[in-house]
Amino acid sequence: MAHAYESNIINYLILNNTHIGYSSGNPRQIMAEMAEFKPICSSFVPKLISRVCANIELKFSELKGCKKSIVQRALKTKLENRR
Image (cartoon, rainbow, N blue to C red; front, side):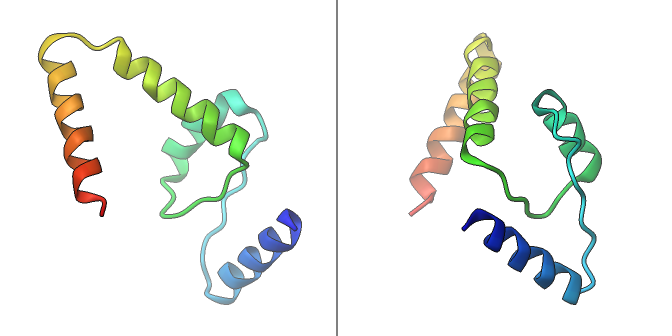
């Protein structure tokens, strides 16, 4: 099913004359590749998303003082406005 989904998305993007970027396949390089591609939308396997989320949460947990307060408030506001 995942390959059919990917195929349909790629066909749609090609038909709409959109640029497509492919990853090197190295999970450790994903964030650097995302910074280079600057995608508007992207598709990932759930395991990779979990790793990226864990990495972000780790960096947030290391924040201290004012930066930590700003991040916590921003996340709280975002979650409240999600409805």
